[in-house]
Length: 131
Image (cartoon, rainbow, N blue to C red; front, side):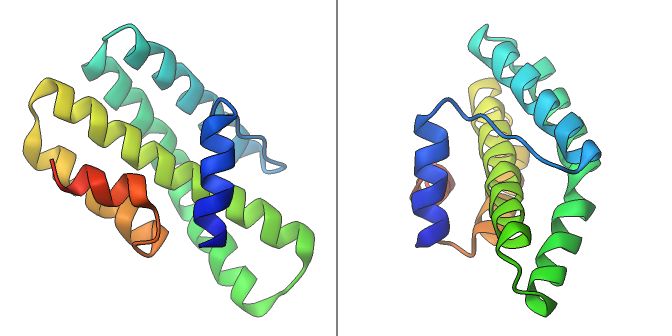
């Protein structure tokens, strides 16, 4: 539930993500760009940009999580938690945009990915699965 609480704080704080890793920084910029597109109702374009960011950062997040299992450094754990929150939020927001477009199959796939990354601990993601 710690990740859920951190996620809720980040989401309520404007969904700002800042990373030390340059590729994750670029992926976070794509997230922000996708958010702007989605807020303008440009759902298809937003999904494309969310997915660009996800493809850019997914392997990095997975590697960070694996390293956390081997390493208990507080700085690494904080960066990994933030990265995990970012990828869950990216999949979740992409799913919501796909729902707006009526793309139910891909929306379900994105929501499932968000559930998997969050270990089914993020209430927003679980609610999205109900659509």
